[in-house]
Length: 249
Image 1 (cartoon, helix red, strand yellow):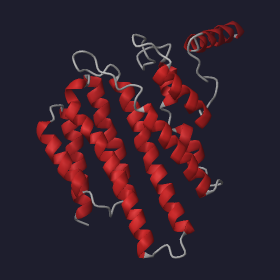
Image 2 (tube, one colour; image 1 turned 135 degrees about the vertical axis):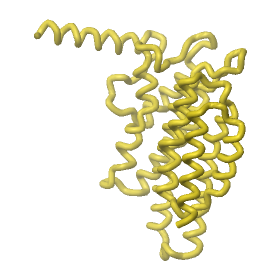
Image 3 (tube, one colour; image 1 turned 180 degrees about the vertical axis):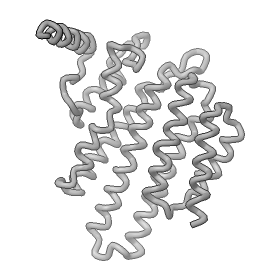
């Protein structure tokens, strides 16, 4: 039994070592990546690789852990969900993670000569990281606005919060724009694209059930007419039905 444990430990060590080559270093020994880690990792992934050098992918057993840790939402949840910390501090951390995410969007957006995404699953994982982050970032921002206001129910405060929610919805609509590039995705990528609609859009609507989703519904209906993937069509139909169900209440 001791020998087996030693062998397993050796194999794990080799895997981590292979990810940390002489050329590319990542903090794989850390359970969670903080903002300093993201600064270094995002910089490395954006500018540290040669044009013809393959980036870390989910399909590569040696580099999968890099993508998994990069897109692990627990990296921000561990701070943003900690109610022992102040809202102002958590909101500042969320804002910095949001800035990191915007830079992360450039990592996996390359197309090949046939206009196919080279890293569609990884690109969508980055997108999902951002969709989950924004739900918490905007809520923390709105909570801070109410906490700092003399009258949280004043029209000025309500208008500021509603404006923030509208911005959040607009940001989510950008994700739907990816369906216009449906042909650039693999079948697995299309499935992951549909999963993003199924997982994050209901969470948005549940968090802000009284917001105006007419623009989202109209966009979903237009995209539905041109979508080819049955999974994407199904996700769009469910989204439209969910918006309709909220508007009837």
